Length: 492
Image (cartoon, rainbow, N blue to C red; front, side, top):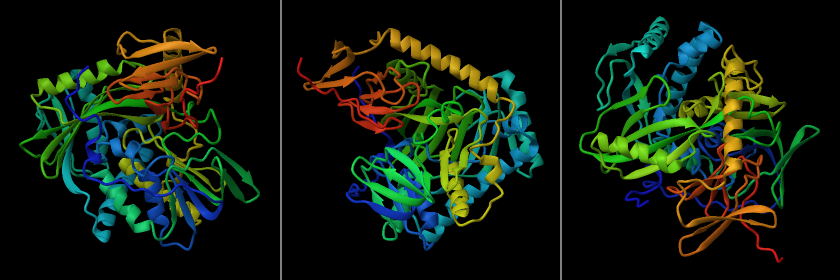
C-alpha cells in the first residue's frame, strides 16, 4: 500500500524530544514515578516544591507514548458519561465526576498562566452530537443532568463540521492545547529538582519493610512511595488490569485546512468520531474515527483505509495519520489511588487522559502528603464496580477469547504485505519482514502469549489483547510487555 502522508502524530512535528541518560547506578529516593507521559510528569510537577526526593523513570522517551498520540482535548463534555455514571452508581457520583473534570481544566489553565507555558492552550466550545434517532434521548438526558448541576448547555441540530447531525448539545467553557508542548514545559520546570531517566525499565517491584525495591536489569531504586503512571501497569496483580479494563484502538488524521474553528466535537456513542482544530504556522483539522476494542477488527489496513475514505468524503487531504490506544474501564471511571500502602496507580482514563491525568496528579500528591481529597473514593482502584461491570466484563472476555483463538489459528492474515513471511524455527513461530533489510521477530507477545498483529501503516507489531507494541526489529516500545520479541539466531 503506497502512503503519501507522514505516519506519525502531528504533535511530534513541533517539539524536540528530550534525551535523558538511562539509570546506571542504584538509587534511594522518597518517591519513584514510573512513566514519563502526562500522568507521570504532572505528578512530578505537583511534587517539585515539596521536600521529597523524587525520581522519574521512563522505559523509552519522555512524552512519546500515548500522550503523543492523543487529540489534546481538555473537556468535561464527554459523550454521555454522566448518564452512564448515574446509571452505574448515582447522581452524586456523576456530579463529583463533573467537578473533577472542571477542576482539572482549571488546574491546567492555572499552570499554563503561572508558568507562562506556550502550549497553544485555548478556550473552545464543545459539542456532543448524533445522526441516529435512537440516541437523541440519551443526549437529552445528558443535557438534563448537566443542567441540573448548574451547567449552561445549549441544543442545536446543526454542528460546525461536515458530518451529519440531527441533534447536538454544546457548552462554551472547554479547552484544547498541544499536549507535548505542555508536558515538555513541565519537564523543564522539574528537571533541576529531581532525577529523570529515560530508556530505564522497571522489571519488578517488591515490598521490603516500609520501602519498595524497584529493579531494572542492572540496578535498583529504593523508594518509600511508588507511582505507577504507565499506561498499562503490570508489576503487581498480574490479573488486576484485565478484569477491570480493556484497550480500545482508534485512528487519527491531521489535515491542513483554510478555516480555523474554535470547536471540538464528538459523537455520543461508539464507534467514536471526534474533531478538533489546531493552529500553528498553518491550520489543521484533527479527526479521530473507527474506535474499537483492540482484540476485534485487527485488520489495520482496513481500519486506516476507512478513515482515509472518510477524509475523502469530507474533501480533506491527509498530512498525518496515526493510531492510538486508550484503556477503558468497565464502569467508565478512572483507576486513581492506592492499591497498596504507598503504592499508587493512575490509569484507565477512558479516552479522556488529559483531564484525568491532571486530576490524578492532584489526588496522588495529596495522598503522599497525608491529605485526602473529595475524589479519593470515586476513583479508588479497589472500589467495587457498578451495576454494568459484570455484564461488560463477561462480554469483553468473550470477545478477547474469540480474538485470541482466531489469531492463534491463523498467524498470517489475508491483508498482510508480500514482504512478510512466516516460519517455524526450533518450534517457535517467527515472522520475517523485508524492506531491503531483513527484520525477524517472534510472533507471540511475551506479556501473556497473545499472537501479535502486524501494523503495516505504522510498521509495528501490536498486541490485540493488552496493547503492547514492538518495532520492526522487535524492540518493545510500549508495555505491558517487559521483553522484546527480536529473533535470536541460534545454531541448529
